[in-house]
Amino acid sequence: MDNRKFEKISRALSDASRITVLQQFRKKQGCLYCAEITDMLDLTQPSISHHLKQLVDADLLIPEKEGRNVKYVLNQKVLDDYIDRLNAFKA
Image (cartoon, rainbow, N blue to C red; front, side):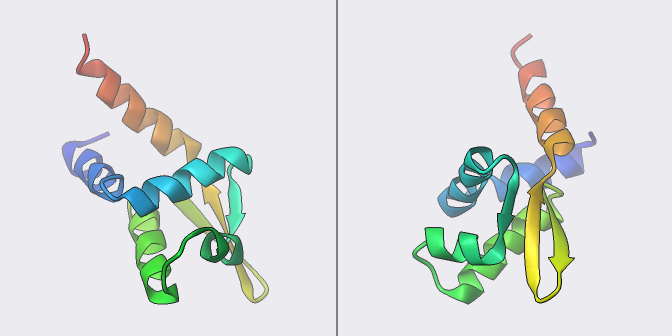
């Protein structure tokens, strides 16, 4: 993982609402529909769209269109790579 990608992920994770979204993915085994995310956050639809876009742009979420619905899947590989990079600072 290069420095630019590491920075982009760090910025995406710098918001409490986005961290809440990622925590929900853990509870739901890595998959959530847009409507579920809207129900869990007390935010307007444009705000939720902004947060999801930030997570998608950082490659932490993968959007999958299912008819009129969008399902988001946690990109575990990117998250694991990010965590490995953070752990490298401990050594």
